[in-house]
Image (cartoon, rainbow, N blue to C red; front, side, top):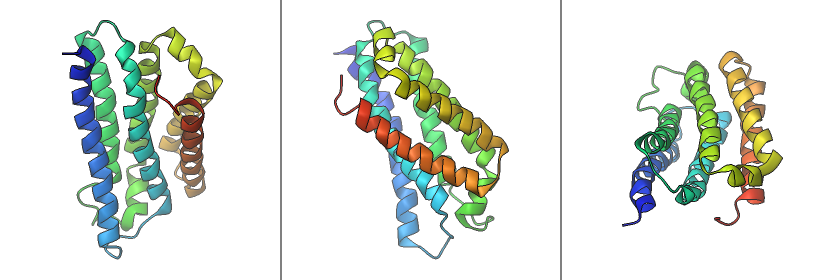
Length: 189
């Protein structure tokens, strides 16, 4: 059996649970639109996370290039996937009745959300380096700018509560991620 096939099964399960959690949350909004007030910035982040999850599964194919798998490496990539899952659970908690809709919930949990988001982008850097120097250099400045901007803005989002900042960050993150995927990852390899 191919070792990478064995390794990616765990990541596939975690990514699957993450996508299912997001889809269940969105389905709940569609099924019961008056139950909780929707917040568009929250939904933009949900779309970003969905795209990031799909992108994560796509680019993790490049881990097939890793020749020697160790438990710390395996654990790291599993932890990366777990960070994604935890982010998904923060965007759609089981109960938000104590909040005034998704807007109130989002701002009350922004420190957690963006701390995990910052950890996500640090994990992204390590993950990219694990795929080798050639892979890292092939990504070029677009990757460097994307990752640095997302990391810095996530750290600022922990401190800043202003809705205009969060709206701008959410839209920027989504648009940049779409552009980055279209530019860098149209094909696997």
